[in-house]
Length: 186
Image 1 (cartoon, helix red, strand yellow):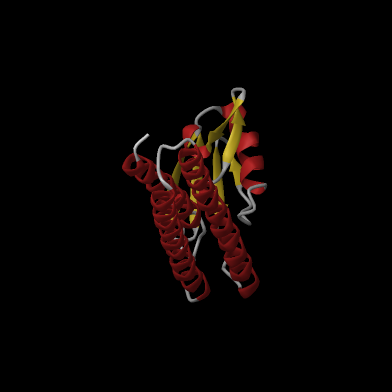
Image 2: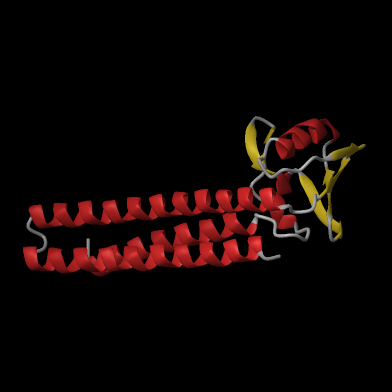
């Protein structure tokens, strides 16, 4: 196991946590309708959990309305239930195989709750990054113990892993601050 590959792998995993966080916060609505709002919604369908976009088509006919066209009529109630229970504050209106989802005006209370959700997403991403750091540090300790690398090299690599972790967490904080500003000032 070469050190460069190990650090690249840790960086790749940390970047994955950032990508997941970006995806999570993109689903938080900031005033106008977007199909991304429904990205976190999963449906219990055909014996497994599936993203909404795998059982329905999502369109944005107006700036404050989403339309979900469910492909399988038997899935309509499951889709409606999942959207209602998704913590997004949406109440779909069933119209045959279609669901119309009016987006309510964002009031101060709703904005604050969206910011709270964004903070939860950020904390989840930071925990994932810390797990990656822990795995990297454990690998370095094991390599040092096994005599693959020396104590000085281990310390140097540990510092690089910590620096990578700090940079990644500050990137999460920056993205969170931008999203918070966007939610509160729309």
